[in-house]
Amino acid sequence: MRKLARPGGLSRRRLLGAAAALAPVTAASPLPLSGTAAAAAPDPYAGLAQEAVTAFRSAWDAYRRLAWGRDELRPISGTGSDFFIPGSTLGLTIIEALDTLYLMELDDDLAAGAEWVKNDLVLDQNAPVQVFETIIRLVGGLLSGHLATRDPVLLDRARELADRLLPAFTRSPTGAPYRYVNLSTGAVSGKENNLAEIGTCITEFGELSRLTGDRRYYDAAKKALRAVYDRRSRIDLVGTALNVETGAWTGTTATLDPPVDSFFEYLWDGWELYRDPDLRTWYTTLTAAVFRHLAERRDGRLWFRQADMTTGRTTGRFQSELTAFYAGLLAQSGRIADGEAYHDSWAAVLAAHRLPPEMIDYTTLRAVDPSYPLRPEYVDSCLFLWLITKKDRYRARARDMFLRQKKYCKVRNGYTAISDVTTRPMKQSDLTPAYWFSENAKYYYLLFAKARRFDYASNYLTTEGNVLRGLR
Ligand code: IFL
Image 1: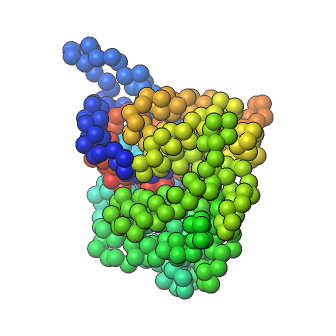
Image 2: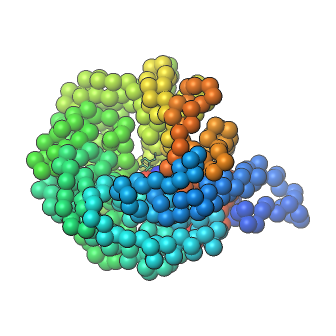
Image 3: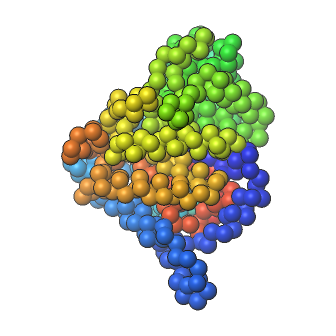
């Protein structure tokens, strides 16, 4: 996931100063160790930068060999799989990997990926696709691919895809999008939609509006966010799901966990990117209520409970691994101490488990869902906390996570998800989720490498890790 490395609480100047201390070093140009540089302390992460590239390459080469053009790689069976449409591909892994390839300076692979998008990507598919996933993964990936390569065809494809998705927004009486749209006919379906899927589109659609000069995308995304905000409860909490035709709540639990998570993220990100004061007000109002009604300390650790959106009554004390992204978001929106405290809570989970379970009971840290689908959120927050605080602790935590991932998830053809982190040996499943190429691999590289194609002082990464600002 995410964000502009320019937190509300810190001045831009301070970040620029900090960033200037970073000498650009990549796998392609290792840390110079002679002359003046030899006097400086060696960068303890330089070797890991190379390892991060090697890890990416092992999965990417396997994908090219075994599943090229398919949505995702199954690294154990050595096959590919479809993500959006059974029996059809939208080249998800290629599109997710484009800007990571650029940052890692793997330019021949980047060219091959861009060629696939230009020649082989078929968008006219007579099948329903999930609107949210298509926006954050494909529209976002095509946009960051365009920004990396400057190839206008990638922007055209992003726009064509967004146009095929727009009926989900424009045909909805409330402006909150339907969950699915048929890419060929524009037929919409799925009138019950959740907050993450309704509200995670303003940065991709906003970027499309900025690049094309066509406001329709930004306006549709903002209207969707407003549809939720206007239906908040009297205590400023929102639930989990709406009927997009009637506007009635169909899920009334207030939570930061999925299926809400990135709804909050995009309120802040939309403000950061486009300076729309409504979005800042909406974020601030809803976040104040989150802290009033959901935040609590358990054994000194910060967690966010589930509650009834109308009364604030507690309904659960679980936390999803996906919510670990919130540590970075809090810091970015100026609540740095809260962000650090929440990351500490997740570090405690890592002290209790070999890999973070998908869902825990935070009163005991027990795994409620023991799977680990190679989630990136903990390391995502490491990156943003490191950029904001400059504390080595966050790079060290990322290194620890990288080594664990290598130990438990590395297979002959790259990296695989785990179906149960509590068994010995761990039960492996057979999938490299496409977000691994866009998120995990990129976050490790940016944390360890001091990439010369990345602006550490001013950048924006989407919820899917697509870089919309800060590519050099
Ligand atoms: O698609 C990914 C993205 O980070 C997101 N939600 C879940 C995925 C990764 O865990 O917003």
